[in-house]
Length: 466
Ligand code: ARG
Image (cartoon, rainbow, N blue to C red):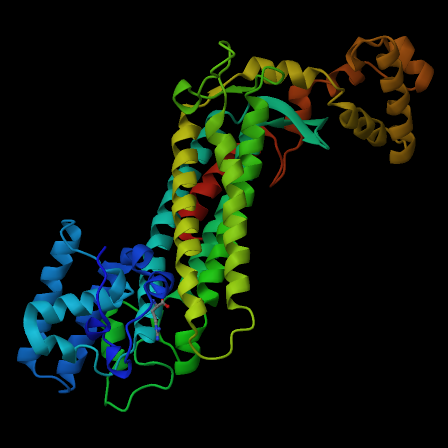
């Protein structure tokens, strides 16, 4: 990137001495905000057309500006545009290139506009586009989870609380729990999009403009649903980006939990699933290793997304109205969060269909740990015992089984009768894992039939947005 003297800076007029070279680099944002170029150009084209519509500039001026901007867009897309640090940011680089290309007419583009409303508009256009990419990626991933849940509706696994075997559940049911988390994440992104898609243009530097602009025209051609109602707020607040980052942090929190489970299940100790070779790497020292790097990295990347949220909150905190240069610092964390979310959504979207499910290992694990002890207590309740007493009887049975190093179903009926004289053979049916699973037969329960119905509802909810 080249350096230039103040005479080339759009704001150079007021200054006698050139900007210090360090300050020039320190205050520049073009290194990262050039990413907003296409949005900046779209915004400028809409602005120029509006200026012509209300006769602030002529039609002829407008076409020269639009043609110039279109040519600059091609140059940028082809990688032939040369960005200059001395021109500070994406906005001034493009405006400068426009004047170089079409002459003085280009200088009319910035009438009734400031970089303050311009940059706020660019970020909002960028973010709504990225939200759409994120939502589409989440929808693909959610469809994969439903497919997997449907396939594995009758696959039994141990359900855990405190990471201790608790009760048998369907693996499909577990996948649908992930689906629910992501469905709420999608809802949060879509809701936040409403507040992102509000147009700041017209706010000028902070107080609006003395020109007879038509903000609705601009909003309509740029696809904004609403006009920002207050010029001070429009150029100043980045709460829409913070809100997005909070939803991103929540999504990463969910991803980190899902990743953690994949890492555990993929371990030799669990062996519930196997990640595809394409999603793992080896160790440079230990030849036997196949490490679950992808879920580990997703889990780790939650850190930077949480950090970006905290960074943006802190950047906004205590800023007086209206625009302050602090806000230039909003871009890097926001871009990083967007990129990280999109990568992690892709990582999960690619990884889920590649999973190998080891139903046998899951069933064997369910058979250990007295997973159906609650079913036995429930059975005793149905035969007339108060739940607390039933809990105590089964607790003693578990104690015996532990002492004898056997399962609850290995205790004889005589042994059960010592604990509860009215016990019948029914006990062995009640202890059966599939019976236990099928018994949880209500909306939200883990019975395979319910999981299949939940899958059908999930597909509908995915399509109808609730
Ligand atoms: N590069 C600036 C930003 O990202 C654009 C707005 C600058 N406005 C100003 N008056 N310095 O916030």
